[in-house]
Image (cartoon, rainbow, N blue to C red):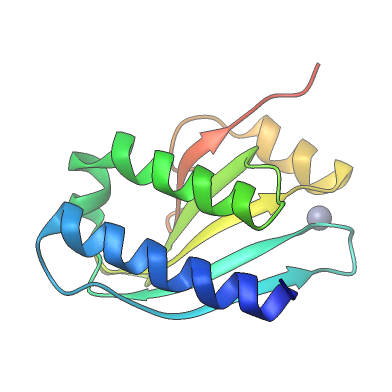
Length: 128
Ligand SMILES: [Zn+2]
């Protein structure tokens, strides 16, 4: 499969799983693979209809789904997080990111699930 076919397939499958889990229309309006100048790389899944409460209540399931999706995209699921629309309880995106060393240090220094107001950490594996 090409990278776009893999993205397309996983976008659809994750959307179905989230709709079944939450029993409401959740839209994954775009799934992108990215690479940043700093060396970070990963995938961003832009969402509509997903709320902060959904994450808190169904965190275990959502983390598992996101891990599976990330692995299907061959992205190590070491850092999974949600980004919120600032000042709201609306989730803007779900993200899997393989951190570069510098960004890793920035996040490793922070503590808790919400190092920044717009970030909710779902999974963060510390390096040795
Ligand atoms: Zn980085």
